[in-house]
Image (cartoon, rainbow, N blue to C red; front, side):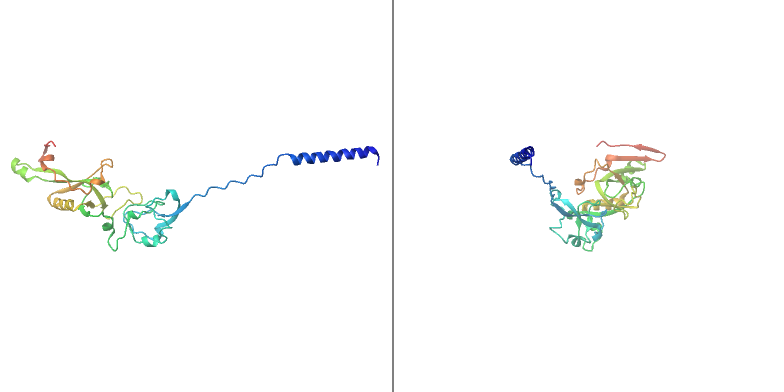
Length: 267
């Protein structure tokens, strides 16, 4: 082997050694980053309505189901599977005192065990009475009064005392009950199939015992009319109150044959 080749080979060996030393002494490359794992959210199985549940409906096992909810959003009033795994069997037959939309959590405060009683007795609050009165399209706001609306009850009757003193036919109207809840129109206790008008012959009202007595007596004295109240004016907290009868002279109407004369006493 000639000297030139030996020199070239030596130089190549030295260069390779230097390159190896440089690579060994350089910075160590960082290890590959591990993919970040998603944070697992804690959940809880909550009992919810599987389909729409109306007022007065008895619950069946097919009406409810378990659904996962974020544990932080599960209120204490919700029914959790971890606390009551047999809740569905326990609540079968309970009656809904309020409507539930699909997916809405079931709250036991809105259910009641009827124990063989009718649904109307089940949905009545403690101390209240359900009493019915005849209505028509004219005395029931043209059929636009629906269950859970609030109404005033007005009586119209002949005023015998005024007729004796004036000798003309006289009528008086007065509000005997304020802001009471309508439980049902005939047998309808909820809207169905998008129906928004229920023209019935009977309205069932939620009244206190004293109010029920007043209504029963008033039916014998004249014609009763239901006046629908605005949602903005309704105050459910007043439903249990028993208003004092108003002075009949405060809203008096004298009707004369072939003419009408109206006199209103200031309030």
